[in-house]
Length: 229
Ligand code: C5P
Image 1: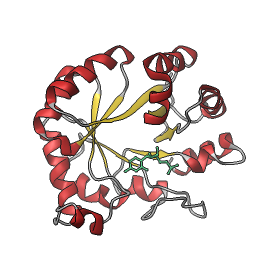
Image 2: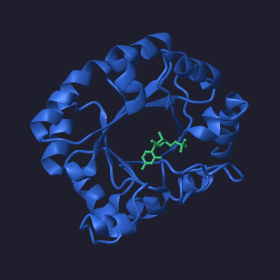
Image 3: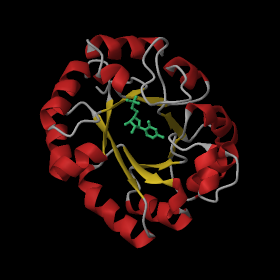
């Protein structure tokens, strides 16, 4: 049976041994693991399949943040179809046709639209000519993505309650940028605790370093998952 934890553990490692070790340490408490560009560009599809064959009880959040013309994104989706991830990320700013191309190519995968990177602030947005405030733009991107077939949205915890209010209950909301109280913030700026993010309407929180860099990752995963029950 799959673990029902609302924590998705971000495995930001390029080496296979550390990735495998972290899953081994935490799999009692975590059911979904995020493999992103660092892992994927080092090990590719065969690396993901190796993880899947070693750990049959976990699900994969494939964080490739696809962003290209619809035809290319559809091709990229076909290329990862046999991995059959639970979630596959695309950038919401790729537009309706790109998101529809992804969702129609992989109807059984939760195409997950990333709204605005939490590393961007209003000042950087204005420099790029994006003068809308971040909340308004996040909501527009999320609505457009859902209307185009995205089944999940990634946003900062600050926008989760707004998205839940406007998108309803069917959309899966996922938020990184969370830290247990008292934990190091690292490079995350506007953080919430996992409990606050879930209370604001998130279905899942994505957490990396508070677990992967903990002296006891198993205990950290257990404590964070327990804080959400
Ligand atoms: O270590 P930490 O908990 O900060 O990891 C958060 C994870 O979520 C990382 O894999 C990071 O790339 C990802 N992420 C994020 N902010 C976003 C999108 C993804 O922190 N807006």
